[in-house]
View 1 (cartoon, rainbow, N blue to C red):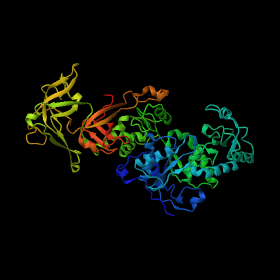
View 2: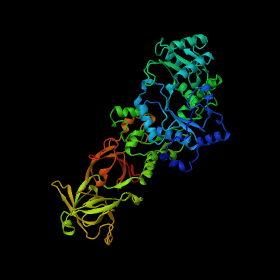
View 3: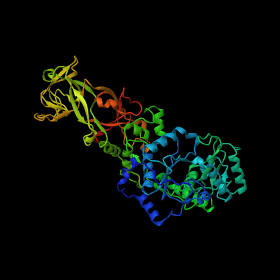
View 4: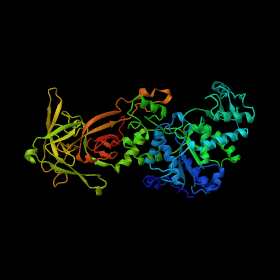
Length: 603
Protein backbone atom coordinates (compact mmCIF):
# COMPACT_ATOMS: atom_id res chain seq x y z
CA UNK A 1 0.00 0.00 0.00
CA UNK A 2 1.37 3.38 -0.92
CA UNK A 3 1.55 6.16 1.60
CA UNK A 4 0.80 9.84 0.99
CA UNK A 5 3.60 12.34 0.86
CA UNK A 6 3.41 14.65 3.90
CA UNK A 7 2.75 17.84 1.97
CA UNK A 8 -0.50 19.66 1.55
CA UNK A 9 0.13 22.95 -0.20
CA UNK A 10 0.83 23.68 -3.82
CA UNK A 11 4.17 25.29 -4.72
CA UNK A 12 2.48 28.62 -5.52
CA UNK A 13 1.21 28.82 -1.96
CA UNK A 14 4.61 28.24 -0.37
CA UNK A 15 6.02 31.73 -0.79
CA UNK A 16 4.91 32.79 2.68
CA UNK A 17 6.33 29.62 4.25
CA UNK A 18 9.84 30.25 2.94
CA UNK A 19 10.41 32.83 5.65
CA UNK A 20 10.62 32.03 9.36
CA UNK A 21 7.16 32.03 10.90
CA UNK A 22 6.59 33.90 14.17
CA UNK A 23 6.11 31.48 17.04
CA UNK A 24 2.75 31.00 18.74
CA UNK A 25 1.35 28.62 21.32
CA UNK A 26 0.24 26.07 18.71
CA UNK A 27 3.70 25.93 17.18
CA UNK A 28 5.21 25.54 20.66
CA UNK A 29 2.86 22.61 21.41
CA UNK A 30 3.67 20.87 18.12
CA UNK A 31 7.42 21.39 18.52
CA UNK A 32 7.24 20.01 22.06
CA UNK A 33 5.30 16.94 20.91
CA UNK A 34 7.76 16.32 18.09
CA UNK A 35 10.71 16.64 20.49
CA UNK A 36 9.12 14.22 22.99
CA UNK A 37 7.94 11.81 20.31
CA UNK A 38 4.37 11.98 21.59
CA UNK A 39 2.95 10.53 18.39
CA UNK A 40 6.06 8.83 17.01
CA UNK A 41 4.67 5.30 17.48
CA UNK A 42 1.46 5.88 15.51
CA UNK A 43 0.72 3.63 12.59
CA UNK A 44 -1.17 4.56 9.43
CA UNK A 45 -2.82 1.98 7.20
CA UNK A 46 -3.28 4.47 4.36
CA UNK A 47 -6.92 5.27 5.16
CA UNK A 48 -8.91 6.17 8.27
CA UNK A 49 -10.05 3.25 10.40
CA UNK A 50 -10.38 1.65 13.80
CA UNK A 51 -7.62 0.20 15.97
CA UNK A 52 -7.49 -3.11 14.12
CA UNK A 53 -7.26 -1.38 10.75
CA UNK A 54 -4.46 0.97 11.77
CA UNK A 55 -2.50 -1.89 13.37
CA UNK A 56 -1.97 -3.32 9.86
CA UNK A 57 -0.21 -0.16 8.71
CA UNK A 58 3.32 1.19 8.74
CA UNK A 59 4.72 3.93 10.99
CA UNK A 60 2.92 7.10 9.97
CA UNK A 61 5.02 9.07 7.45
CA UNK A 62 3.24 12.25 8.53
CA UNK A 63 4.87 13.79 11.60
CA UNK A 64 1.59 15.45 12.53
CA UNK A 65 -1.98 15.28 11.24
CA UNK A 66 -4.36 18.24 11.43
CA UNK A 67 -7.78 18.65 9.89
CA UNK A 68 -10.16 21.27 8.56
CA UNK A 69 -13.68 19.94 9.27
CA UNK A 70 -16.42 22.25 7.89
CA UNK A 71 -20.09 21.34 7.99
CA UNK A 72 -21.38 21.53 4.38
CA UNK A 73 -24.26 23.86 5.25
CA UNK A 74 -23.04 27.14 3.81
CA UNK A 75 -20.26 29.03 2.06
CA UNK A 76 -16.88 29.44 3.73
CA UNK A 77 -15.96 32.93 4.95
CA UNK A 78 -12.88 34.87 6.04
CA UNK A 79 -12.91 33.16 9.45
CA UNK A 80 -12.72 29.78 7.75
CA UNK A 81 -9.87 31.08 5.61
CA UNK A 82 -7.93 31.76 8.81
CA UNK A 83 -8.61 28.22 10.04
CA UNK A 84 -7.63 26.72 6.68
CA UNK A 85 -4.34 28.62 6.68
CA UNK A 86 -3.61 27.57 10.28
CA UNK A 87 -4.37 23.87 9.84
CA UNK A 88 -2.88 23.38 6.39
CA UNK A 89 -0.01 25.74 7.12
CA UNK A 90 1.06 23.94 10.31
CA UNK A 91 0.88 20.56 8.56
CA UNK A 92 3.02 21.95 5.74
CA UNK A 93 5.57 23.52 8.05
CA UNK A 94 6.05 20.44 10.26
CA UNK A 95 6.13 17.66 7.68
CA UNK A 96 2.54 16.65 8.26
CA UNK A 97 -0.73 16.11 6.45
CA UNK A 98 -3.94 18.10 6.80
CA UNK A 99 -7.26 16.38 6.19
CA UNK A 100 -10.31 17.97 4.63
CA UNK A 101 -13.32 16.35 6.25
CA UNK A 102 -16.99 17.20 5.96
CA UNK A 103 -18.83 17.01 9.27
CA UNK A 104 -22.05 15.97 7.59
CA UNK A 105 -24.03 14.77 10.61
CA UNK A 106 -26.96 17.17 10.16
CA UNK A 107 -28.64 16.10 6.90
CA UNK A 108 -31.47 18.66 6.96
CA UNK A 109 -29.10 21.61 6.46
CA UNK A 110 -26.44 20.11 4.20
CA UNK A 111 -26.15 20.04 0.44
CA UNK A 112 -23.75 19.01 -2.33
CA UNK A 113 -23.62 22.65 -3.47
CA UNK A 114 -21.77 23.47 -0.25
CA UNK A 115 -19.55 20.38 -0.53
CA UNK A 116 -18.38 21.51 -3.96
CA UNK A 117 -17.81 25.17 -3.11
CA UNK A 118 -15.83 24.25 0.02
CA UNK A 119 -13.48 22.03 -1.98
CA UNK A 120 -13.06 24.76 -4.61
CA UNK A 121 -12.30 27.35 -1.93
CA UNK A 122 -9.65 25.23 -0.20
CA UNK A 123 -7.93 24.50 -3.52
CA UNK A 124 -8.13 28.15 -4.57
CA UNK A 125 -6.39 29.12 -1.32
CA UNK A 126 -3.51 26.92 -2.46
CA UNK A 127 -3.94 23.68 -0.55
CA UNK A 128 -4.48 20.01 -1.27
CA UNK A 129 -5.75 17.61 1.36
CA UNK A 130 -5.32 14.10 2.73
CA UNK A 131 -1.79 13.86 1.39
CA UNK A 132 -2.46 13.94 -2.34
CA UNK A 133 -3.64 16.44 -4.98
CA UNK A 134 -6.19 13.87 -6.19
CA UNK A 135 -7.38 12.54 -2.82
CA UNK A 136 -11.10 12.78 -2.13
CA UNK A 137 -12.10 14.53 1.09
CA UNK A 138 -13.15 12.49 4.08
CA UNK A 139 -16.65 12.84 5.51
CA UNK A 140 -18.26 11.97 8.82
CA UNK A 141 -20.89 9.91 7.03
CA UNK A 142 -18.12 7.50 5.96
CA UNK A 143 -17.87 6.57 9.63
CA UNK A 144 -21.56 6.16 10.55
CA UNK A 145 -21.22 2.38 10.80
CA UNK A 146 -18.32 2.69 13.22
CA UNK A 147 -20.08 5.39 15.24
CA UNK A 148 -23.06 3.12 15.66
CA UNK A 149 -20.76 0.31 16.80
CA UNK A 150 -19.08 2.67 19.26
CA UNK A 151 -22.48 3.70 20.64
CA UNK A 152 -23.47 0.07 21.22
CA UNK A 153 -20.15 -0.53 22.95
CA UNK A 154 -20.77 2.42 25.30
CA UNK A 155 -24.18 0.98 26.19
CA UNK A 156 -22.70 -2.47 26.81
CA UNK A 157 -19.92 -0.98 28.94
CA UNK A 158 -22.43 0.97 31.05
CA UNK A 159 -21.39 4.34 29.64
CA UNK A 160 -24.57 5.23 27.72
CA UNK A 161 -28.34 4.88 28.02
CA UNK A 162 -31.52 5.66 26.10
CA UNK A 163 -33.47 8.50 27.69
CA UNK A 164 -37.20 8.76 26.96
CA UNK A 165 -37.83 12.02 28.80
CA UNK A 166 -39.26 14.90 26.81
CA UNK A 167 -36.95 17.68 25.72
CA UNK A 168 -38.48 19.98 28.35
CA UNK A 169 -37.95 17.40 31.09
CA UNK A 170 -34.32 16.90 30.11
CA UNK A 171 -33.74 20.63 30.08
CA UNK A 172 -35.20 21.09 33.58
CA UNK A 173 -33.40 18.05 34.99
CA UNK A 174 -30.09 19.17 33.57
CA UNK A 175 -29.83 21.90 36.22
CA UNK A 176 -27.82 25.06 35.74
CA UNK A 177 -24.58 26.65 36.86
CA UNK A 178 -25.82 26.97 40.44
CA UNK A 179 -27.78 23.72 40.70
CA UNK A 180 -26.68 20.16 39.88
CA UNK A 181 -28.71 18.08 37.48
CA UNK A 182 -31.08 15.24 38.37
CA UNK A 183 -30.62 11.70 37.09
CA UNK A 184 -33.10 10.60 34.46
CA UNK A 185 -35.55 7.94 35.65
CA UNK A 186 -34.39 5.86 32.65
CA UNK A 187 -30.70 6.07 33.59
CA UNK A 188 -30.64 3.06 35.91
CA UNK A 189 -32.52 0.65 33.65
CA UNK A 190 -30.68 -2.43 32.44
CA UNK A 191 -28.06 -2.53 29.72
CA UNK A 192 -30.28 -4.99 27.82
CA UNK A 193 -33.20 -2.51 27.92
CA UNK A 194 -31.07 0.34 26.56
CA UNK A 195 -29.51 -1.84 23.86
CA UNK A 196 -32.95 -2.98 22.72
CA UNK A 197 -34.32 0.55 22.64
CA UNK A 198 -31.28 1.87 20.76
CA UNK A 199 -31.70 -0.81 18.12
CA UNK A 200 -35.37 0.11 17.84
CA UNK A 201 -34.26 3.70 17.26
CA UNK A 202 -31.93 2.49 14.49
CA UNK A 203 -34.63 0.34 12.90
CA UNK A 204 -37.09 3.23 12.56
CA UNK A 205 -39.60 1.82 15.03
CA UNK A 206 -39.78 4.97 17.15
CA UNK A 207 -40.91 8.53 16.46
CA UNK A 208 -38.58 11.45 15.80
CA UNK A 209 -37.79 13.22 19.05
CA UNK A 210 -39.25 10.47 21.24
CA UNK A 211 -35.90 9.56 22.81
CA UNK A 212 -32.16 10.08 22.58
CA UNK A 213 -29.05 8.15 23.46
CA UNK A 214 -27.07 9.88 26.20
CA UNK A 215 -23.58 9.36 27.57
CA UNK A 216 -23.63 8.34 31.25
CA UNK A 217 -21.14 10.63 32.97
CA UNK A 218 -22.08 12.87 35.91
CA UNK A 219 -25.28 14.87 36.31
CA UNK A 220 -23.62 16.87 39.12
CA UNK A 221 -20.58 17.91 37.08
CA UNK A 222 -19.74 21.63 37.28
CA UNK A 223 -19.22 21.42 33.49
CA UNK A 224 -22.77 21.22 32.19
CA UNK A 225 -21.47 19.62 28.99
CA UNK A 226 -20.64 16.52 31.06
CA UNK A 227 -24.16 16.14 32.46
CA UNK A 228 -25.03 13.12 30.33
CA UNK A 229 -24.87 14.81 26.90
CA UNK A 230 -27.02 13.46 24.06
CA UNK A 231 -24.96 11.50 21.52
CA UNK A 232 -27.62 10.12 19.11
CA UNK A 233 -31.05 11.35 18.07
CA UNK A 234 -33.82 10.06 15.80
CA UNK A 235 -34.15 12.12 12.64
CA UNK A 236 -35.83 10.91 9.50
CA UNK A 237 -34.03 12.95 6.87
CA UNK A 238 -32.47 12.03 3.56
CA UNK A 239 -28.70 12.46 3.73
CA UNK A 240 -26.89 13.80 0.66
CA UNK A 241 -24.30 11.00 0.89
CA UNK A 242 -26.05 8.04 2.60
CA UNK A 243 -29.59 8.60 1.39
CA UNK A 244 -32.18 6.97 3.66
CA UNK A 245 -29.91 4.31 5.13
CA UNK A 246 -30.07 5.90 8.58
CA UNK A 247 -32.89 7.41 10.58
CA UNK A 248 -30.63 8.09 13.57
CA UNK A 249 -27.70 10.46 13.43
CA UNK A 250 -24.84 11.13 15.85
CA UNK A 251 -24.55 14.46 17.57
CA UNK A 252 -21.61 16.62 16.52
CA UNK A 253 -19.92 16.41 19.93
CA UNK A 254 -19.98 12.61 19.70
CA UNK A 255 -19.00 12.32 16.05
CA UNK A 256 -16.17 14.83 16.00
CA UNK A 257 -13.69 13.18 18.38
CA UNK A 258 -14.35 9.79 16.77
CA UNK A 259 -13.64 11.22 13.33
CA UNK A 260 -10.37 12.70 14.60
CA UNK A 261 -9.30 9.38 16.12
CA UNK A 262 -10.21 7.29 13.06
CA UNK A 263 -8.12 9.66 10.95
CA UNK A 264 -5.19 9.54 13.40
CA UNK A 265 -5.31 13.30 13.91
CA UNK A 266 -2.65 14.47 16.34
CA UNK A 267 -3.60 18.10 16.92
CA UNK A 268 -7.30 18.93 16.67
CA UNK A 269 -7.44 22.71 16.38
CA UNK A 270 -10.69 24.60 16.89
CA UNK A 271 -11.99 27.93 18.13
CA UNK A 272 -12.56 28.88 21.75
CA UNK A 273 -16.29 28.15 21.84
CA UNK A 274 -15.40 24.44 21.85
CA UNK A 275 -13.20 24.72 24.95
CA UNK A 276 -15.96 23.52 27.30
CA UNK A 277 -16.47 20.48 25.07
CA UNK A 278 -12.87 19.30 25.45
CA UNK A 279 -13.51 17.25 28.64
CA UNK A 280 -16.18 15.21 26.80
CA UNK A 281 -13.85 14.86 23.81
CA UNK A 282 -11.22 13.36 26.13
CA UNK A 283 -13.75 11.25 28.10
CA UNK A 284 -15.17 9.63 24.97
CA UNK A 285 -11.84 8.82 23.32
CA UNK A 286 -10.39 7.40 26.54
CA UNK A 287 -13.27 4.90 26.81
CA UNK A 288 -13.17 3.86 23.15
CA UNK A 289 -9.39 3.39 23.29
CA UNK A 290 -9.72 1.40 26.55
CA UNK A 291 -12.31 -0.75 24.79
CA UNK A 292 -9.91 -1.47 21.94
CA UNK A 293 -12.08 0.23 19.31
CA UNK A 294 -9.70 3.10 18.57
CA UNK A 295 -5.92 3.29 18.33
CA UNK A 296 -3.94 5.43 20.75
CA UNK A 297 -2.51 7.83 21.55
CA UNK A 298 -5.65 9.93 21.38
CA UNK A 299 -5.79 13.21 19.46
CA UNK A 300 -5.64 16.32 21.60
CA UNK A 301 -7.90 19.32 21.13
CA UNK A 302 -6.49 22.84 21.32
CA UNK A 303 -8.48 26.04 21.04
CA UNK A 304 -7.57 29.41 19.56
CA UNK A 305 -9.45 32.70 19.30
CA UNK A 306 -11.83 33.03 16.39
CA UNK A 307 -11.49 35.88 13.93
CA UNK A 308 -13.36 39.06 14.86
CA UNK A 309 -13.00 41.46 11.93
CA UNK A 310 -14.45 44.96 12.05
CA UNK A 311 -17.20 45.91 9.58
CA UNK A 312 -17.88 42.20 8.95
CA UNK A 313 -20.32 39.55 10.15
CA UNK A 314 -19.46 35.85 9.91
CA UNK A 315 -22.62 34.19 11.22
CA UNK A 316 -23.79 31.75 8.52
CA UNK A 317 -27.39 32.47 9.47
CA UNK A 318 -26.96 36.22 9.12
CA UNK A 319 -25.01 35.92 5.90
CA UNK A 320 -27.80 33.74 4.53
CA UNK A 321 -30.31 36.43 5.56
CA UNK A 322 -28.38 39.01 3.52
CA UNK A 323 -28.55 36.71 0.50
CA UNK A 324 -32.15 35.56 0.79
CA UNK A 325 -33.46 39.06 1.61
CA UNK A 326 -31.53 40.33 -1.43
CA UNK A 327 -29.49 42.83 0.54
CA UNK A 328 -26.57 41.56 -1.56
CA UNK A 329 -26.37 39.89 -4.95
CA UNK A 330 -25.67 36.33 -3.86
CA UNK A 331 -23.05 34.47 -1.84
CA UNK A 332 -20.29 35.68 -4.17
CA UNK A 333 -21.23 39.35 -3.96
CA UNK A 334 -17.87 41.16 -3.66
CA UNK A 335 -19.10 42.88 -0.50
CA UNK A 336 -19.57 39.53 1.26
CA UNK A 337 -16.85 38.11 3.56
CA UNK A 338 -17.28 34.69 1.93
CA UNK A 339 -14.23 33.27 0.21
CA UNK A 340 -16.09 33.31 -3.11
CA UNK A 341 -17.02 36.94 -2.49
CA UNK A 342 -13.48 37.92 -1.54
CA UNK A 343 -12.18 36.16 -4.64
CA UNK A 344 -14.62 38.07 -6.86
CA UNK A 345 -13.59 41.31 -5.12
CA UNK A 346 -10.01 40.66 -6.24
CA UNK A 347 -8.47 39.10 -3.14
CA UNK A 348 -5.69 36.64 -3.86
CA UNK A 349 -4.74 33.43 -2.03
CA UNK A 350 -1.42 35.07 -1.14
CA UNK A 351 -3.18 38.05 0.47
CA UNK A 352 -5.35 35.82 2.67
CA UNK A 353 -2.38 33.68 3.69
CA UNK A 354 -0.45 36.85 4.53
CA UNK A 355 -3.43 38.08 6.56
CA UNK A 356 -3.58 34.82 8.55
CA UNK A 357 0.16 35.05 9.27
CA UNK A 358 -0.03 38.71 10.21
CA UNK A 359 -2.89 38.45 12.72
CA UNK A 360 -1.33 35.36 14.30
CA UNK A 361 -2.85 32.83 16.67
CA UNK A 362 -3.82 33.65 20.26
CA UNK A 363 -5.96 32.32 23.09
CA UNK A 364 -7.74 35.63 23.71
CA UNK A 365 -10.47 37.29 21.66
CA UNK A 366 -9.71 40.62 20.03
CA UNK A 367 -10.90 42.68 17.11
CA UNK A 368 -8.84 42.99 13.94
CA UNK A 369 -9.35 46.18 11.96
CA UNK A 370 -10.57 45.63 8.41
CA UNK A 371 -7.74 47.84 7.14
CA UNK A 372 -5.32 45.03 8.10
CA UNK A 373 -7.00 42.73 5.57
CA UNK A 374 -7.00 45.47 2.94
CA UNK A 375 -3.34 46.17 3.60
CA UNK A 376 -2.43 42.54 2.91
CA UNK A 377 -4.21 42.69 -0.44
CA UNK A 378 -2.54 45.97 -1.31
CA UNK A 379 0.89 44.50 -0.54
CA UNK A 380 0.42 41.42 -2.68
CA UNK A 381 -1.06 43.33 -5.63
CA UNK A 382 1.54 46.10 -5.70
CA UNK A 383 4.20 43.83 -7.12
CA UNK A 384 1.98 41.86 -9.48
CA UNK A 385 -0.93 43.92 -10.78
CA UNK A 386 -0.65 45.25 -14.33
CA UNK A 387 -0.95 49.05 -14.59
CA UNK A 388 -3.52 50.83 -16.73
CA UNK A 389 -5.40 54.13 -16.93
CA UNK A 390 -9.14 54.48 -16.54
CA UNK A 391 -11.43 57.47 -16.17
CA UNK A 392 -14.30 56.68 -13.83
CA UNK A 393 -16.27 59.93 -14.07
CA UNK A 394 -15.42 61.11 -17.58
CA UNK A 395 -15.67 64.56 -19.02
CA UNK A 396 -14.13 65.54 -22.35
CA UNK A 397 -11.02 67.69 -22.50
CA UNK A 398 -10.47 69.44 -25.87
CA UNK A 399 -7.01 70.65 -26.87
CA UNK A 400 -8.01 73.64 -28.92
CA UNK A 401 -4.64 74.15 -30.68
CA UNK A 402 -4.01 70.47 -31.46
CA UNK A 403 -4.56 70.82 -35.20
CA UNK A 404 -2.12 73.74 -35.39
CA UNK A 405 0.63 72.07 -33.32
CA UNK A 406 0.26 68.39 -34.22
CA UNK A 407 -1.84 68.41 -37.40
CA UNK A 408 -5.49 67.70 -38.11
CA UNK A 409 -6.69 64.19 -37.21
CA UNK A 410 -3.24 63.20 -35.94
CA UNK A 411 -3.06 60.66 -33.13
CA UNK A 412 0.18 60.75 -31.16
CA UNK A 413 1.25 57.37 -29.77
CA UNK A 414 2.21 57.26 -26.09
CA UNK A 415 3.85 54.41 -24.17
CA UNK A 416 3.84 53.42 -20.54
CA UNK A 417 5.31 50.48 -18.58
CA UNK A 418 3.07 47.47 -18.01
CA UNK A 419 4.57 47.42 -14.52
CA UNK A 420 7.03 50.10 -13.29
CA UNK A 421 9.06 47.58 -11.24
CA UNK A 422 9.18 44.89 -13.92
CA UNK A 423 10.58 46.41 -17.12
CA UNK A 424 10.91 42.91 -18.57
CA UNK A 425 7.12 42.88 -18.98
CA UNK A 426 7.39 45.56 -21.64
CA UNK A 427 5.18 48.53 -22.41
CA UNK A 428 1.63 49.32 -23.35
CA UNK A 429 0.59 51.85 -26.00
CA UNK A 430 -2.32 54.23 -26.41
CA UNK A 431 -2.89 57.45 -28.32
CA UNK A 432 -3.52 61.06 -27.52
CA UNK A 433 -5.39 63.30 -29.91
CA UNK A 434 -7.39 66.50 -29.99
CA UNK A 435 -9.83 65.20 -27.36
CA UNK A 436 -9.23 63.03 -24.29
CA UNK A 437 -11.32 61.89 -21.36
CA UNK A 438 -10.38 63.16 -17.91
CA UNK A 439 -11.93 62.87 -14.45
CA UNK A 440 -14.65 65.46 -13.87
CA UNK A 441 -13.08 66.28 -10.50
CA UNK A 442 -9.83 67.30 -12.22
CA UNK A 443 -11.34 70.66 -13.23
CA UNK A 444 -12.25 73.48 -10.87
CA UNK A 445 -13.20 76.92 -12.15
CA UNK A 446 -12.31 78.38 -8.75
CA UNK A 447 -9.75 76.01 -7.25
CA UNK A 448 -9.53 75.37 -3.51
CA UNK A 449 -6.20 75.81 -1.73
CA UNK A 450 -3.71 73.11 -2.69
CA UNK A 451 -5.50 72.17 -5.92
CA UNK A 452 -2.86 71.66 -8.64
CA UNK A 453 -4.94 70.19 -11.43
CA UNK A 454 -6.95 71.96 -14.12
CA UNK A 455 -8.20 75.50 -13.63
CA UNK A 456 -7.95 78.50 -15.96
CA UNK A 457 -4.31 79.50 -16.41
CA UNK A 458 -2.80 76.39 -14.73
CA UNK A 459 -0.48 73.90 -16.42
CA UNK A 460 -0.53 70.13 -15.81
CA UNK A 461 0.98 67.10 -17.46
CA UNK A 462 -1.21 64.46 -19.06
CA UNK A 463 0.56 61.40 -17.67
CA UNK A 464 2.88 59.76 -20.24
CA UNK A 465 1.86 62.58 -22.62
CA UNK A 466 2.19 66.33 -22.99
CA UNK A 467 2.00 69.38 -20.78
CA UNK A 468 -1.17 71.40 -21.32
CA UNK A 469 -2.50 74.71 -20.08
CA UNK A 470 -6.15 75.05 -19.08
CA UNK A 471 -8.03 77.90 -20.70
CA UNK A 472 -11.50 77.37 -19.26
CA UNK A 473 -14.58 75.28 -19.96
CA UNK A 474 -17.84 75.18 -21.91
CA UNK A 475 -21.07 75.05 -19.92
CA UNK A 476 -24.70 74.25 -20.57
CA UNK A 477 -27.64 76.55 -19.93
CA UNK A 478 -27.71 75.52 -16.27
CA UNK A 479 -24.07 76.37 -15.75
CA UNK A 480 -22.84 72.77 -15.68
CA UNK A 481 -19.42 72.14 -17.20
CA UNK A 482 -19.79 70.07 -20.38
CA UNK A 483 -16.27 70.30 -21.77
CA UNK A 484 -12.89 71.39 -20.42
CA UNK A 485 -10.64 73.44 -22.72
CA UNK A 486 -6.86 73.60 -22.83
CA UNK A 487 -3.94 74.23 -25.15
CA UNK A 488 -1.07 71.89 -25.90
CA UNK A 489 2.41 73.14 -25.04
CA UNK A 490 4.75 71.94 -27.81
CA UNK A 491 7.85 69.81 -27.23
CA UNK A 492 6.77 68.59 -23.77
CA UNK A 493 5.92 64.96 -24.50
CA UNK A 494 7.16 62.58 -21.81
CA UNK A 495 10.36 60.80 -22.72
CA UNK A 496 11.43 63.31 -25.39
CA UNK A 497 14.33 65.80 -25.17
CA UNK A 498 13.34 68.93 -23.33
CA UNK A 499 10.07 67.45 -22.06
CA UNK A 500 10.79 68.71 -18.56
CA UNK A 501 11.49 72.26 -19.63
CA UNK A 502 8.07 73.29 -18.41
CA UNK A 503 7.65 72.63 -14.69
CA UNK A 504 4.23 71.60 -13.39
CA UNK A 505 2.91 70.57 -10.00
CA UNK A 506 0.00 68.50 -11.28
CA UNK A 507 -0.14 65.25 -13.28
CA UNK A 508 -3.50 63.78 -14.29
CA UNK A 509 -4.54 60.50 -15.83
CA UNK A 510 -6.59 60.38 -19.00
CA UNK A 511 -7.81 58.15 -21.83
CA UNK A 512 -7.82 59.19 -25.48
CA UNK A 513 -11.23 59.63 -27.04
CA UNK A 514 -10.04 57.95 -30.25
CA UNK A 515 -9.13 54.60 -28.69
CA UNK A 516 -11.01 54.60 -25.38
CA UNK A 517 -13.16 51.59 -24.53
CA UNK A 518 -16.37 51.66 -22.53
CA UNK A 519 -16.50 49.61 -19.32
CA UNK A 520 -18.77 49.05 -16.37
CA UNK A 521 -16.93 49.66 -13.13
CA UNK A 522 -18.42 48.57 -9.82
CA UNK A 523 -17.17 50.68 -6.94
CA UNK A 524 -17.54 48.56 -3.81
CA UNK A 525 -17.25 49.85 -0.27
CA UNK A 526 -17.65 48.22 3.13
CA UNK A 527 -21.01 46.57 3.57
CA UNK A 528 -21.55 47.98 7.07
CA UNK A 529 -21.07 51.42 8.61
CA UNK A 530 -20.77 50.06 12.16
CA UNK A 531 -17.40 48.46 12.99
CA UNK A 532 -19.24 45.81 15.07
CA UNK A 533 -22.56 45.54 13.24
CA UNK A 534 -24.05 42.63 15.19
CA UNK A 535 -22.34 42.99 18.57
CA UNK A 536 -24.46 43.16 21.70
CA UNK A 537 -27.64 42.01 19.98
CA UNK A 538 -27.72 44.91 17.52
CA UNK A 539 -29.79 44.61 14.36
CA UNK A 540 -27.05 44.31 11.77
CA UNK A 541 -29.48 45.21 8.96
CA UNK A 542 -29.72 48.73 10.37
CA UNK A 543 -25.95 49.10 9.98
CA UNK A 544 -25.92 48.37 6.24
CA UNK A 545 -24.03 50.95 4.20
CA UNK A 546 -26.46 52.37 1.60
CA UNK A 547 -23.48 53.42 -0.54
CA UNK A 548 -21.65 50.09 -0.50
CA UNK A 549 -22.04 49.76 -4.28
CA UNK A 550 -21.94 52.41 -6.98
CA UNK A 551 -21.88 51.41 -10.65
CA UNK A 552 -20.29 53.83 -13.13
CA UNK A 553 -19.72 53.83 -16.86
CA UNK A 554 -16.02 54.42 -17.33
CA UNK A 555 -13.59 55.02 -20.15
CA UNK A 556 -10.58 52.69 -20.17
CA UNK A 557 -7.34 52.50 -22.12
CA UNK A 558 -7.18 49.95 -24.97
CA UNK A 559 -4.87 47.50 -23.16
CA UNK A 560 -7.74 46.70 -20.78
CA UNK A 561 -9.73 45.35 -23.71
CA UNK A 562 -7.59 42.21 -23.47
CA UNK A 563 -8.24 41.68 -19.77
CA UNK A 564 -9.08 38.15 -18.66
CA UNK A 565 -11.69 37.36 -16.05
CA UNK A 566 -10.12 37.54 -12.57
CA UNK A 567 -7.09 39.47 -13.87
CA UNK A 568 -5.92 42.16 -11.46
CA UNK A 569 -4.94 45.72 -12.38
CA UNK A 570 -3.87 48.92 -10.77
CA UNK A 571 -5.90 51.70 -12.29
CA UNK A 572 -3.30 54.41 -11.88
CA UNK A 573 -4.34 56.95 -9.29
CA UNK A 574 -7.57 55.10 -8.36
CA UNK A 575 -6.50 51.81 -6.82
CA UNK A 576 -6.65 48.10 -7.56
CA UNK A 577 -9.38 46.51 -9.66
CA UNK A 578 -10.20 43.04 -10.94
CA UNK A 579 -11.97 41.94 -14.10
CA UNK A 580 -15.17 40.44 -12.73
CA UNK A 581 -15.06 36.64 -12.67
CA UNK A 582 -18.71 36.26 -13.63
CA UNK A 583 -19.83 39.10 -15.90
CA UNK A 584 -16.64 40.34 -17.58
CA UNK A 585 -16.06 39.70 -21.28
CA UNK A 586 -13.71 41.38 -23.76
CA UNK A 587 -16.76 42.73 -25.58
CA UNK A 588 -18.35 44.03 -22.37
CA UNK A 589 -15.63 44.73 -19.81
CA UNK A 590 -16.67 44.76 -16.15
CA UNK A 591 -14.24 45.67 -13.38
CA UNK A 592 -14.66 45.52 -9.61
CA UNK A 593 -12.92 47.85 -7.20
CA UNK A 594 -10.70 45.82 -4.86
CA UNK A 595 -8.77 48.22 -2.63
CA UNK A 596 -7.40 51.75 -2.77
CA UNK A 597 -3.76 52.72 -3.14
CA UNK A 598 -3.72 53.66 0.52
CA UNK A 599 -5.99 53.30 3.53
CA UNK A 600 -8.31 56.28 3.42
CA UNK A 601 -11.61 54.77 4.58
CA UNK A 602 -13.54 57.11 6.84
CA UNK A 603 -10.83 59.77 6.67
